[in-house]
Length: 143
Image 1 (cartoon, rainbow, N blue to C red):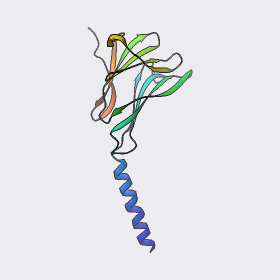
Image 2 (cartoon, one colour):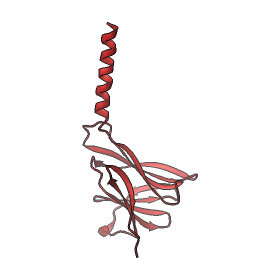
Image 3 (cartoon, one colour):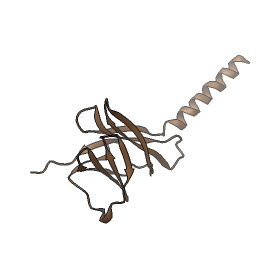
Image 4 (cartoon, rainbow, N blue to C red):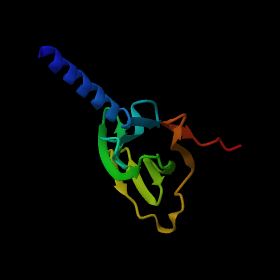
């Protein structure tokens, strides 16, 4: 009887690992001034059958502040998020049809209704899928 119970527990654990193996839990960062000053994109999928992922941006300027702010969910395929300069300690993030403003003075982030959808400044880079994993890829340097 003990052997049968142990076998059932092992099979249940293997089954659970199989289900969780397809889930995404990732974070990738744009480092502004080293690791203490950054914007971090976090993506989380609880179950493999979920067709959208929860997303958050961690706005960090340590030791002064660090906040994790939920943003709109995304599909399981990472939708590119572009990062633009938008002012002193301010960045604009553009993902799909959505714009966000992130400020590191007080570690804040908000939805932004960008009239005309024009970038407010220089493109710094993008959060993209690179070699199968989310990554921040800097924009090519202007000559």
